[in-house]
Length: 94
Image 1 (tube, rainbow, N blue to C red):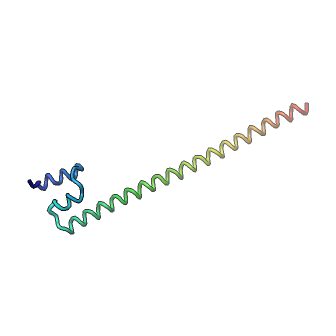
Image 2: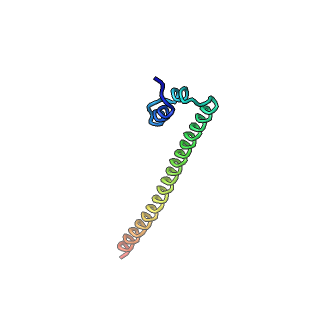
Image 3: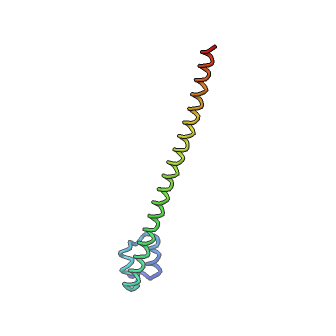
């Protein structure tokens, strides 16, 4: 029993037919199949690179936020320590 082109496309697009079987049965020329494979590989690679760049940017943003938070905490600690020392010294000198 042979499948129609419509059935073959449906099975492949729904994930029920592996690529190797699809390319043997879809009735397209070798060059057309090759071009489709290369387009698919290019899209997958592009998606991979975009995802990798997105994750890299997220990491960089997280590091920047962490550094900003550390600076803010350090400045607040310095202010608190200075105030505490002033209070202690003022109480000590009285």
